[in-house]
Length: 240
Ligand SMILES: Nc1ncnc2c1ncn2[C@@H]1O[C@H](COP(=O)(O)OP(=O)(O)OP(=O)(O)O)[C@@H](O)[C@H]1O
Image 1 (cartoon, rainbow, N blue to C red):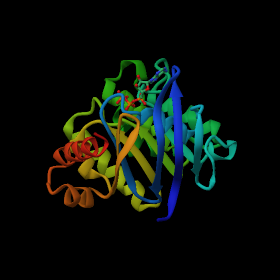
Image 2 (cartoon, rainbow, N blue to C red):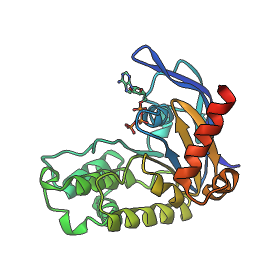
Image 3 (cartoon, rainbow, N blue to C red):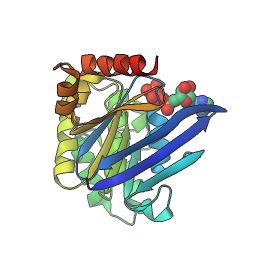
């Protein structure tokens, strides 16, 4: 597998508690990989380690061939946190232009990114006056500026209506088809089927790493939520 991200034996502690217990996985280039797991399972912590903002206890994280957090990765990686990271007192366009300027890019690139997330109609509105879903999309637009090679999105579809969620997933696949690698976290299992590959995480351990089709076949069910539950039960029987 041609990997954009390689995680080896990753152990992370937060608040003196071990929250990732030796995770190893890869994120395939040019595909949409879903990081799925219940609330508190460690998705954000793993994402933080990949984008290089998490202190790790042991193990290695390699991103685009370099150690996670390397300065040279900054221009190649787009990261959208769960809390939208845009300025409320600036318009959508001003935010996008600000991030474009930081990368030495112009207004056209900012407008392209805004159009990509379907916010052209609201580009002159202050971000503080937008709905939660619109604000998340404004944040996503800023991460798309400069066409990063790796896009890491922490629960990007939370608060979006079903039509918009479908649009965003469509956009993620277009980006992947154009060569971008996407890692998208979600705790909503009905989004799992939209991914090319899945990393299933529970209580800081990886319990599944495969395509949705292979996970369905291995678990003997077409329902990915049920497949996830069966993987958990299997694991509990092994460790009991
Ligand atoms: N700043 C922190 N200090 C101490 N413990 C933390 C901190 N942030 C998260 N944790 C703990 O780390 C574990 C993993 O949290 P994490 O945020 O990675 O989970 P998650 O799967 O992203 O959850 P969610 O879907 O709710 O965002 C949880 O037990 C959480 O309580």
